[in-house]
Length: 166
Image (cartoon, rainbow, N blue to C red; front, side):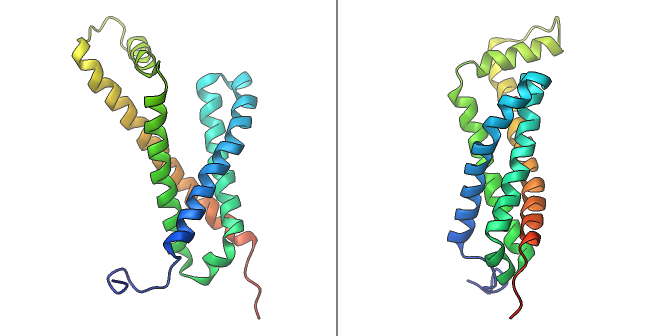
């Protein structure tokens, strides 16, 4: 099985899971205070969006720094990529759960759609598809952000703590 994936020179799956889960916990712990600070000057939408971007980058740098020893032991780019991909998967699920958890998700989507398309009449049955497209867009943006910022952040964080040469 290891030959199929290019050999056994990468992080153990448990290490990747712990790093990605730690990144998501740090995103929550850093993101909430950032949202509180940024909502006042930037508004609800942009304050939360900018706060999320900063939180993702900070959490990736922290995870890269903490996991630097394990990352430097193995194929570095592959290890960083594995952490970023798993963190992106977790973020995709979190965004889908978020939409399901908020009872006003559908009315928010309808308000946004009506504001951007005044005078357009939409059948009740079509709101399902419009909400699905909006959810898909949010998942896509979140996953891309976590992939890019996660990879960059873990790489930078691992550079701060280079292994000691013996």
